[in-house]
Length: 453
Image (cartoon, one colour):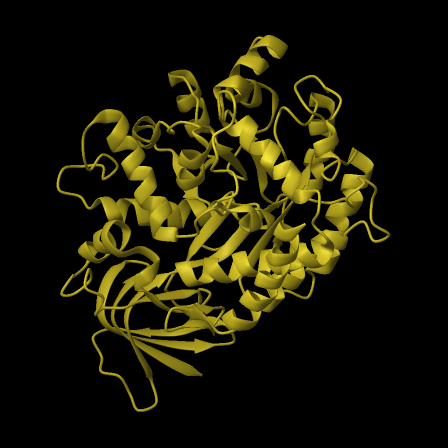
């Protein structure tokens, strides 16, 4: 058994000082409070449980910053998507693995210890299936093995270019499946993760734009009780198109026509009316929010105040991976509300409560639910997924209790993350993934070839 000692730790029942954690077989075997470190203990600053990244398209890390030139007309998600299509046209399986490993390593360095990989890149560059239809799934799994991050694999079903079964566009050819080929893809993923003790496999119907009602009904049993993730109501154009197709807004259509429950994570859910907020919250599903990407794409701001007032649950994700920062996602969520309301400290709940603590706890609980993972946190029997912050960071000096989370979220972010353990294995030390140099060298070589093409 190894022991880690922390000046302070956010345990399952709140903050404690001088905490000693015993780690065995990847789990927390013992928790002692108000004790001195013993000989041989590793000593650290502040311990937090790792956060879940509920929504990632890892391959998009390679195109971060490439879509920041203004287009000839109105520039929005749809024009960004054309840049993404051009980028993925050139990706080989080796490229996907290298880019995904870089993204996963950065997630660990930022304080995420599990990722929900919304994996929709399946086919070869010409749209045909690989000889091994799960080739790119295997590349994602290889990146997970190389980095050590916890994984919830979410194979994506994508078949159409718009509501009502519209014919897919050429740029979407690498995504496409039918229900039968998708079932084989999910089965391949389940078989491939069998040796990973806590890997989870769910499913992800991409969006109501990309799947018909009959297809949705056909694939839902493949979840087998696991997570179900879907993009919904991200853009105003999507809302208008759904109304034209069905007479209902996307969220309302989903609530009326699908068995939405706590297994589901509805990604973005940006454009909701009051009735949709209430119905969504009642379902027990998680709102998968990606505030940095949503800001970058100009999507809009999720109605977080109304959502929390209804008892809604949320997690955060890095989506396009333009900037990977766990604390940064929480900060962007609060700031989006401040900008819209021209007010401060909006997501703290009651008067005098800490915003940072409310954001962290909400994302921790909701993220674990969305990814089918335990929310035991730093407690006996819990997975040893631990993030250590530098207590000597200028923004964390002499902070106590929830003030630590306020300072991490709003004044320091990923630069304060010093060490990260995933299932008891130290993957990050002194702010760097233990294999960061090798992973980055492969990534740089990949990008040099891709961007020179």
